[in-house]
Image (cartoon, rainbow, N blue to C red; front, side):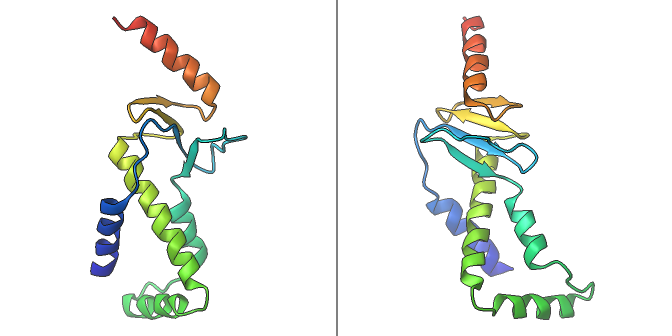
Length: 135
């Protein structure tokens, strides 16, 4: 547990930040049909889906569940899954840091958030209309 928290803190501290980047935060329920070049797309449900696929039937007994999890983590190829977990949790931290309240959400210029769509063009139109109304 302490190792996991340390890794999450380490990831948060070393997470690359892109200035003036367009980022889509979404889930499997709201797929991005054709992502535009240069737009980052992050699925916020990826961590839970990985957990369910890798640890589908852990025991209700904590000691047995720990043993089962350790066996899974000793399999060849675990490092690939661990990297996927790392990235998916890094994505959750980035969304939380950006103040994302729901999905789908598109963040423009690390400042403006448009909720309810994964369509960049539509989100840009909505943002433009909103900005025109502001003094």
